[in-house]
Image 1 (cartoon, each protein chain N blue to C red):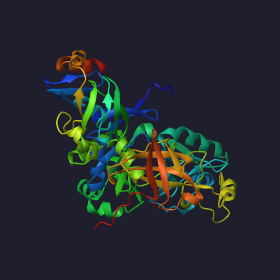
Image 2: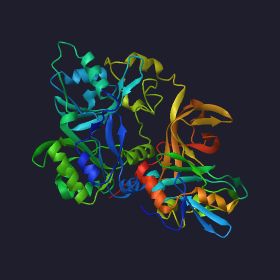
Image 3: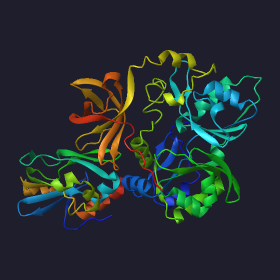
Image 4: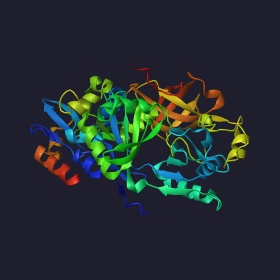
Amino acid sequence: MAQDVLRKSPLDTAHRALSARMAPFAGWEMPIQYAGIVAEVRAVRERAGVFDVSHMGRLFVNGPDAVTLLRETLTYDAARVDEGFGHYNLLCDERGGILDDPYLYRVGRERWLMVGNASRCEADLRWLQAHRRGSMDVSLDDRQALTTMLALQGPGARHVFQAIFSAELEQAVPRHACREIELFRQKALVSRTGYTGEDGFEFVCGLDAGRSLWDALIAAGVAPCGLGARDVLRLEAALPLYGNDIDTSTTPWEAGLGWVVSLDGERPFEGRQALVNARGATERRLCCIRAEERAVPRHGYAVRHDGRELSALTSGSFSPTLDAGIGMAYLPRDLTTPGTALEIDVRGRAVPARVVKRPFYKRGNRS
Amino acid sequence: METPRDLKYSREHEWVRMDGETATVGITDFAQDQLGDIVYLGLPDPGASVEQFGKIGEIESVKSVSELFTPVGGEVSEVNQAAIDDPEIVNKEPYGAGWLIRLRIADPAQFDNLLSAEEYEAHTTSEH
């Protein structure tokens, strides 16, 4: 696709009606902010916000052999995902490098939805096609252009959900669950997942239902939130961003994603041997770093220890929730202990920083 | 967007207010709106001497870093510590509590190189 031809969200006119600031992201023109990134971050941490995430991949994998194809290509064993639930997952190449970090939902016994990164959808589809053997009874159904995807996030999300649907349905979709529902007279999918570190729901639905749902959420007082706030929220929760924190040059072990790799049993899958070999031989690890004076760490800034340059920040931002500059970087194993003193080179200014426990932000228990 | 009539403006989106030999400098409403949430200000120390249209520091929003320039030259007499401590006030009151620095001006004739409110508004419309 030519760089200058940007795909538009099915909610494009709704965003413009709300005076959203639009910007290119992974080939899409998407809302970056409405009221402002800080206000939107606060809305999601304190109340509820809604994000248009229609740029994400939505690939349905259907058929009796879908589970076989997914077990052979994803690091977390799809057979361990119960019907009606989802699990974070990884596609790795033969060297154990991360190709994408999709969320995989088992919508039905033989019906799966893989939600991958916007920048990786085409590669994911090609990867699965390449691993589908002729004898496999499995279909790959790319529904990205035919559906809208919304994320309702925040401690107030459940109350909004109850008001629009029902308390029964809210109870029927516990954490990590997914369920087919009727949404504005169209079949839709709802899951209790997200990318903000808060409770919340994600919806995949038809284009008309998507517009109706968006309007209903805005009418209910939910704050429209852009990708700017989403990036800050996911970084505060230390959720990796593909292309920044993880890519084909990083392994799940280094990224702290070992919990997404199932090595028990004999299941063969792409990258398994490389991942077995790399396990325990990991020289570096993705760490959370917090600036100790007012500064905005950003992607690419050098990280030093005792004057020695260690690496560069893979992500960085000002955190409104912590009121501090935060970032992530791969650090040598002996410098990953929380409290370790570092310096971030903020355009020539040496800003003192420390390794802190991952994540930066974890939501508390709420009634 | 607000553009007070009694101020002078630079093409780099700073304003300056004259008060005797002292000039107060800040960024415009247009600039703060374009930047979004301001979270960091890097300003010169009092006593520094700065040249007209020269770089005096940096301003950072959540998403971007921009250089700050001064519309007039002189010696920095004061920096707004309240804005350094809480940069959000630059978004809220760019022409008031969110001012950036005060200068003892070097040459009042430099004001002739600046834009009026009307000219600045025309400038932002053409740039936008």
